[in-house]
Structure formats: C-alpha cells, structure tokens
Image 1 (cartoon, one colour):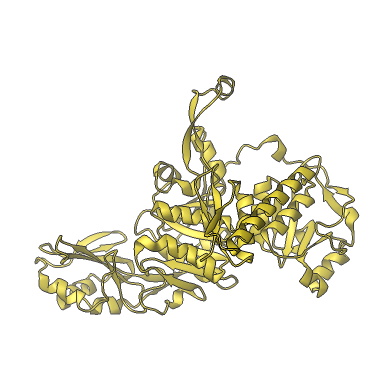
Image 2 (cartoon, rainbow, N blue to C red; image 1 turned 90 degrees about the vertical axis):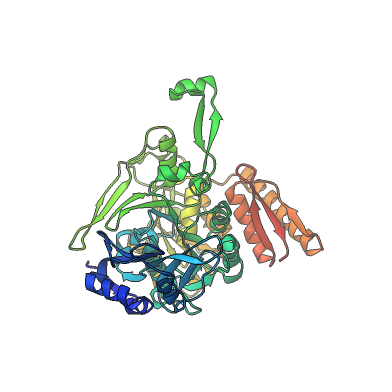
Length: 528
C-alpha cells in the first residue's frame, strides 16, 4: 500500500520567514523531503532534508531576520518551543543568558497517513507499545497516526506536552481524529497531567510523546497498572540503550545487581553477582525505528530483557516496507520455552465445571476445555469484554490463552450478562455450534482475572482467601479515608493486588496512586 502524504500547510511556515530565506527554500525545490530550517545569529542559514543539508544564503543572519520570525509566531513556552495555530509546525529557540533569541530551528510538521500500517497489528492488539528512535526519524508522526486509528473505536486521550501531536492552539489538528488532547502547562508537569487524564477522563488508551523523566516513567507504570493501554515514545535507538539509561530503564523493568547462591551460579555457569530485571515492564511491546521504512520489534519485552541480561539476546522481529509499499516481516527466532509452556498436539480434554461466574448460562458445561493437568492453548473470543484485560490476565497467570478476533476460530466465548440477555446474534450462533459460553457480571479486571483462572482451573482456596484479605484491607482503608483520614497506605503487593486496590478506590470515588519500587511498591488511597 502506498503512503498518502499530506503536508500541513508548508505555506504557513514559509510565510513567517524573511523573503530572501523563503525564496532560497523554494528554489531548492525539494519541499517533500524538507525536515527543518536552521537559523543562527552570525551564521549562514541552512535547510535540512531527509538526504542531507544545504546552505540557503551566502550571508550571515542578523537580529533583524530572527525578530522577523519571532514576531509572527506564538510565544515560546518553558521548553523554548512555539507553534503556529492549527498546524503541526514547531519553532524551537536557542536563547542567550539574558533570554534573547539567538537561534531558531523551524521544523516542518506533517500528518502522514498510512505510515502506521507497518505496526498496525501491534497498535490494535491492546498491548502497551513503546517506540524508540533518534530525533527526526518519525516517532511523533507515527504516534499521531496511531492515536487517530485507535480513536475510531476506543476512548483515546493524548498528553501533548509540546503540542507536537495535536498542533498549536486550543483546537486539535484534524490528523488526530476523534482523540481528545490534554495540553501541558509546563514540561515538568507532564507526569501530573498523565495521572489527571486517567483519573478524570476515563480513557482506554493514553498516548504520550517523549517520556524523558523519572516521574513520567513512574506515572506510566501507575497508568499501566490500572489497565489502560499506553502508546508512548522515548529517545533512544535500541533496547540496550534504554536499559543503560537510569532514568528510563524502569519502562522495561529496570535492572539491579543480585547475588546468586553457589549452586545457582554453577547451574547458570556465571559469576555470583549478575544483573537481573528488577520489576515487570511497564510496556508489553518495544519498537525500534531504524529508518522510516525499517522497524525492529520486540514482541515480549520481558523475555527480551531477561535474555539480554543473560548474554543470550533473542533476535528481534524485523519489518520493512519496500518502494511499492509492500510490508515484509522477518520473524524472530522463538524464545526458549519452559516446560509448562511447551506446546502439545493432544486434543483438548473437557471438564465438568460451571461457568466462571454464578449465572446459569453455560449451555454445554461438559465441553469446556480442561487444562488443569497440562496447560494447552485455548482460543477465546471476547464479545463485549475488554481484550486487553484478558490478555493481561493471561500474561499475569502464565497461561497460553489466545484472544482471537473471529468467533469461528474460538474454543470458548466470553461475554457480559447484558449481551447474553439480549441474545445477540454472535452469541446465538456460538450456542448453536455447541461452544461453551462464559458470562461475566462486569467488564472489570477482577472478573476477567477470575474467568481466566477458572478456565484453566488454577484457582485454589488459599488464593481466594488471600484475595479476600486484600479486598478487606482495601475496604477498611477506604472507610478510614471517608471518615476523615488524610490518606491510608496499603501493604505492598504485586501488580494484580494493586490493580484491584485501584479499582476499589475508583469505585468509592477516591484517588489512589502507587508509590515505591518493586517489591515494596504499594498503593496510597486519599481524597482529591
């Protein structure tokens, strides 16, 4: 598929330039590949293109040319960036110690439709995706297109720190489609706006450009724990770079030095002190943009990081787009699997158990697959149930469940009570084929977790008792805050426990944040 390029009104950018610089840009006659125009006091101006840089004039820039531009654009924010109303162009300033502008970088902003097709399946999978790449390689363009596509079917909120995604001004650029945009008053407050977006606007997807500070990385982890899909970018070229970045390494789980026992060190064939992943990654998938038409994809960040730290890196998946627009995918070598994950070719057995929720709507309980003894792949079709929550539940429980988009390919169907009572056509067809139907009371994290656990016969009484204790503790904390306490800190727990605590606090119309690092990360509940 060929790309459909739409340049965001290059004329608007050229209009703010001095006449001699504008004529030089037009004379170059290469506007489709123009990236930015660089203007520095006392130096000759130049234009940067995709394939190189050329000088525009043979005379030095004076204050007159710089003032000509700054008088015709918006004001510079705290990050020394300014924009132009209803366009995607960005003008960045270099200032001297007295605050006067002595240099400008005028970047051309474009909305390019069709660029996301190379990773569209990952964006629409419901998994959280982190995009890496050097400046100018097209991360923001890709992010803008991803927000537009996801907003067609989901509630999408863009946290737009520098107005690069949605353009300058109060009205977002049409390139973001139906997505809503939250602007950030100061770059240092980006993490607060990220949390505000989740608490106030009930998004299913949050899009963030340039995660660059530790507080933003922590805010991203808090958002992911609440079951919201994240699509974000960060500066860096490879997974190795990100792991060595102390500020951002938490996005992929972070690293720490641990001391092994003598027996374990001998078994691994390593020294006693080794590097290990500190916590579960915030993002599920990592994409490295090498060029505009060549991407490398780490489908499972957790496995990739663990393998990298053990000096046995797994080759990533490579995706390329040729000149005709055809996309080619070179699959990575499969990750080594544990015994419990080894695939089997024996047919699925059945078990006689009721549906995962106490409603008498399972027409054929004797046909529900049994994988209690040996975990086997079960294909699940979700009708009205959040697919990303099912995927996350399967990942947390370590079961080989596959969420399919075609009911014909499914082994079981899961839906909500409302849809089942309405006798929707898809559900009726599944019943007619004898497919097991699971009915949930609500589209919540705990309900989907319980469904997957029951489907694989994993739930034990001890686990149920522990979860009851977790819920009781959260109820007591909520009651204390409602009765006047400023805040209550809950005991540390894994991400599943924290997610349940966040959900209970939200249902009680209270605020909850996660604090600390694994394994001492805990939830604090308080009023606004």
